[in-house]
Amino acid sequence: MADDARFTFTKILVDDLEAEAAFYSTVLGLVEKHRVAGGEGDGAYAESVMCCAHSDEPSLLLLKPLHRQVPTPGEVVLGFAVADVDEAVRATEASGGSVNSGPRSLPQHSLRIAQVKDPEGHLLELVQRL
Image 1 (cartoon, rainbow, N blue to C red):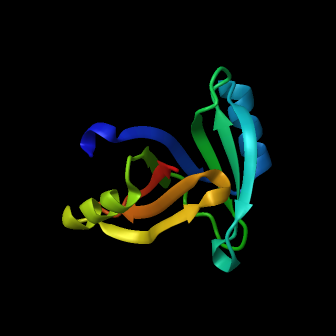
Image 2: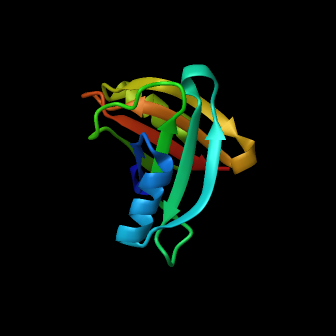
Image 3: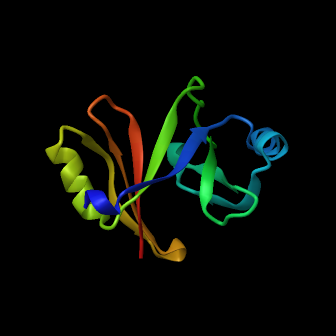
């Protein structure tokens, strides 16, 4: 499994999605490829998927929680592409980490995802292409 893992994107929580997307576009030349919205209640969000100008691969995702306070800047969600999300979740637990949100499929995006925490509590999003 370790041979299939690779770092894929950084996700940061933002308070002003429009201003942040404009900042990263202006300062770093990132291009907004699309917006995603989802979740319910306190989990509702809007997200801007930013890519490098000559790539369709996401490099920075800006996540705006819609019904809850944004934590102090400095929090990130590290995203990793894996061959098998379920296997990676089992490995997380076996290695002293914990499951924040168990594996689930997002057929509309052809993905299977889970959120786990490393032993120190840093949040990782594991993504498997279906």
